[in-house]
Image 1: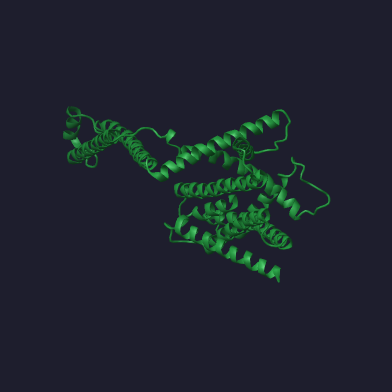
Image 2: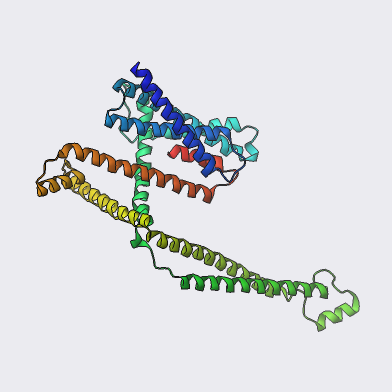
Length: 389
C-alpha cells in the first residue's frame, strides 16, 4: 500500500513538472514561432520532467521522505528513461531535423538520420576509452556503461555552466559592477546616432540624384553614335566618370550604417544599465545585492579551502556554515545542536544555489535561443537545450 502511495506522489509530481516544461516551451521558447513540432515539444517536456524528478528524489533521500525501496525503484526507472532519451531519442531527432533542413538529403532523411546517430554513438562510446569506466562485469548497453559516459559529459558541462554562473551572477546582481550612467550620456549618444542617420540619408540622396542625372544624360542606357557622337565623346567627359564617386559614396554609406548599428547597440546597453541602477536602489535590488556579496564570499571561500585541501592532501571535515555556527555558539555560550542545524542550513543554502542556477540557466538559454534561432534551426536548438539539461 505504501508503494502505491509513493508511486502516486511521484507520478503526480512528474505530471506537474511535465506541465511546467510544456508551459515554458510554449510561453518562452516558442512564443514567436507559429510552426511547432509536436515531438520536439514532448521530448523537451519529458526531459524537463524527469530531470526535475531526479532532483526531487535526491531531496527526498536527504529528508527521508517516502520508503527507501520506493525511492530506489523510481530512481532506477528515472535513470533508464533519461538514458533512453539522452543516448537514443534526442541525438536521433537532432540528426533528423538537421537532415530535414538540407534539400538534397530530404528524400532520404531517415537513412541519413540513422547514419548521423551511428556516428554519434561511435564517438559517444569511444569517449570511454581514456577513462577507467569500462568493466567486464557489465554488458555493452548496461546502465553502468551508459551512465559513466553521460557522467563524464555531464560533469564537464556542469563545470562550464558553474563557472559561467559564478561569474555572471555577481556581475548581474551586485551594484559594484554597475557603471555610472546619466541622462546626459544617453542624450549625447542619441544625438550622435541621429547625426549619423542624417549623414546616411544625405549621402543616399546624393547617390540618387547622381544616378538620376546620369540617366537623364543617357550615359547608362542611350550612348550616342555616328560622327557627332564621336565629336561629343571627345569634347565631354568619358562615360562612367561619375561611377568612382558613386563607389566611394557607397563605401561611406556602408561605414556609416555599421557605425549607426554600433551606436544603437550602445544606446540600448546604456538604457539597460540605467534600468539596473534604478532597480538596485529598490528594496528588492538591495536584497539581491546583499545576496550577491554573500554568495560571492561563500564561493571564494569554498574555492580557497578546496585548493588548500588539494595542495596539502587534506580532507575537509567542516564546511563554512558549520564552522560559523560553532564559533557563534561558543562565543555566545548557548545550548545549540550544531550538527543538526548545520546540515539543514547547508542543505538550504545548496538548495538556493541550485534553484537560482537553474533559473539563471533557463534565462540564459532563452536569450541564447532568441539570438541564434530561426524557423529552420529552432527545433534543433531546443533539442540541444534538452540534451544539455
